[in-house]
Image (cartoon, rainbow, N blue to C red; front, side, top):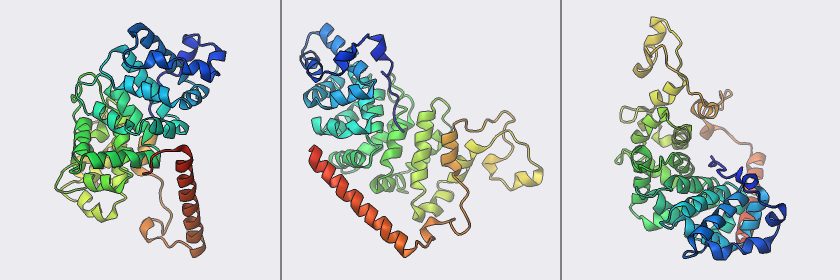
Length: 344
């Protein structure tokens, strides 16, 4: 999931001249006003100007070609300052929502994921929601997601970073100034990594059990959808299925309850349902978000496709898939070398 393009309408509102949006030199002239220590009123105006630019693809491409300006923008976003920090953070949300800018952001500041993570996990940080949205956007792509995981695991060998992230997600009052809804999609993206799934499914940590109630979190479909996506990724670990369905987790009612509506059943039909799905309130509402409903049930598999792990793939198809995978890896390595992004 990508975060909101929170400044998309500001370009017109600010009256930004078309010629400014197309001039690299004029964009570069913003740099002295964005650096830390610049005069506050000019810094605020420059940050608003950059935010307006990020509302359009052409503006994001202009900024992507200015590594020094991107570094200054990051510095401003994580600085303990008032309004300019927020506008800088919102600009980063927009930039990170564009996959074509990911490598330029990471090349401009390789420590960007770690710096944003510190802001997200700081319960006093006022713009933690924006920082979480930037990380959620960056982690949608496999390579930046792996880069974030590398920083997480290197800095937290005991996975305390993941522990704190889950805690911030599961405690609505973690940050009184920021709801942190975007930690949901961030965790969903991170759960594409085997190390994160191992953490979430560790029977001794009781992590996945803490996530289950959030499948019915009514205040935010972003948080709710992120948790459902995380659980879906965990369910691909087939060796944990018995544990997930057993008494220690009992995941099935939490996956089915959002799909239940106010339908009436006969006594015989009711007895066949899990206890948690019996005799629901007549005003019970089904999950309103179609994407979340699809993640919870998916499509009905064809005969013989119920367990994808047991499906026999024809040799020629398997060979083609392997060739495509090798080609993709080679292209990715070439792209990394060409753009100077850190290897992951």
